[in-house]
Image 1: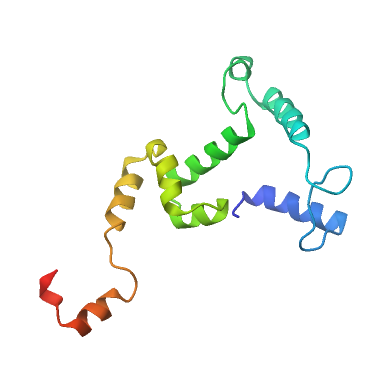
Image 2: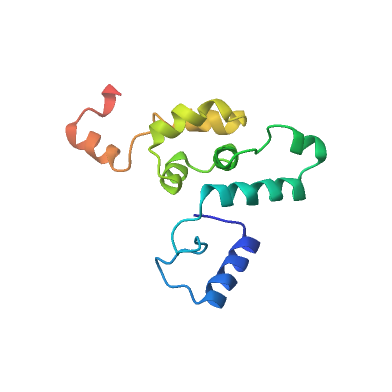
Length: 138
């Protein structure tokens, strides 16, 4: 999954420092399993207070972990990252991604490009059309 280069450096240094192996959790609970939701929720609340204004903390802005996921996916889509990539990174299908997030794409040029590309021929389709002899029918 793509991350900001500064975050990538910090995570890489953490992995080296902790001597983590592939498949090892970066952050785990006391018994080595997943972190409890309550732990994540406490960290999220502290992070919100540390980086948001008092007015923002009092609002619903990024109040839950799902809000952060929604914000991240929205930002990726608004920056023009291909939906197939975003869907793969987050474990969704493109139709599910569009059903959930198409209404939050506020970059009109990006949205228009997505809609235009929806009707593009897949790679190799030109060759198939040429073989069928139906080039002028499209």
